[in-house]
Amino acid sequence: QTQAFERFTSTNSDSSLSDSYIYNIYEDTKGQIWICTKNGLNKLMPNSCSFVRYYSDASHPDNNAYTNIKQDKQGNYWVVGAQPGIFRFNDATGQFTYFNDDQLPQASRYGKCLYIDSDNRFWVGTIGSGAAEFDTRTHKFYHLPIVPNGKGLNGVLVFEILQDGPDHLLI
Image 1 (cartoon, one colour):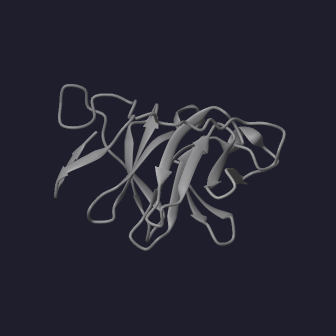
Image 2 (cartoon, helix red, strand yellow; image 1 turned 30 degrees about the vertical axis):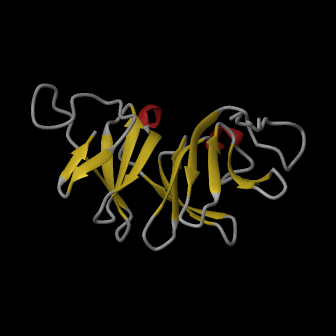
């Protein structure tokens, strides 16, 4: 049996992928495919093999690198990337709401991964500042301690977060 592959690239067309540098591909609860790129969030329109592009800051392209997207139990989309913090994304309006993590120095605020645990708690892994829990009610970040050879994170680079028990995260 032969499998077919469809290749999508970034072109000058507004309906193409916004950037060929892809960080993450995610399928939501409705079966929609989301692609996080170096320059924009993209939703695949499967019937036309085209994309809808979304940007939080069209005037500053460097701020539109998105590395991860997840959907919470209420159907909200959450996105992390080059901006320090987290975005709530409204698919119906195409609008981003930004929640800043101003506790971190500029050089170490790049969100790499996002995980929503079984209790609907949000965990953000960063490049340079370890991991933090984001409280969706207060919009505040609570950073896990970095304690090499102790009880805490062993370093500042977090590429993935998973849960393997009710109160146990793998970071």
